[in-house]
Amino acid sequence: MSNPYINVELRRLVAHRADYICEYCLVSEVNRSSGCQVDHIISVKHGGSTTADNLCYACIFCNLQKGSDLGSINWQTGELVRFFNPRRDFWGEHFQLIDAVFNQSQILAK
Image (cartoon, rainbow, N blue to C red; front, side):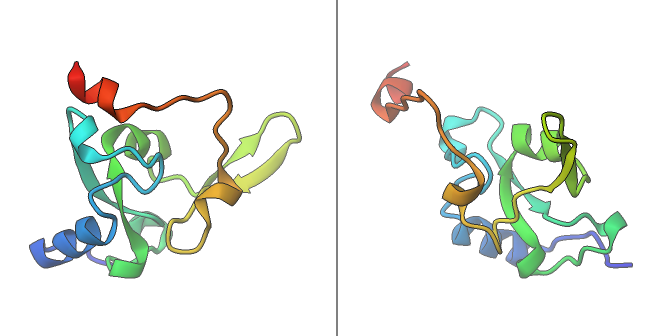
């Protein structure tokens, strides 16, 4: 089993590679009161390694929602759907924004 400890250099590499933006929801850590953390994409308990290829930068909300799961059931189809992997998947093919408006200047002004 992989060692879950993530050293400082690896944490910096992952954060810098993500440009300090959550790789799941694409919200910058400066717009999250709790910031972001380094997450195992595939958890250690499922055989995931503590290497740059299996780590991503995630806000606490996304990390807690994902937990150590690998996927979930699509309740409309009954299909098992693998969770988004920021090292393999293209965000726009996995997610879509519907009627969403994001104006960063309004958020920073509050």
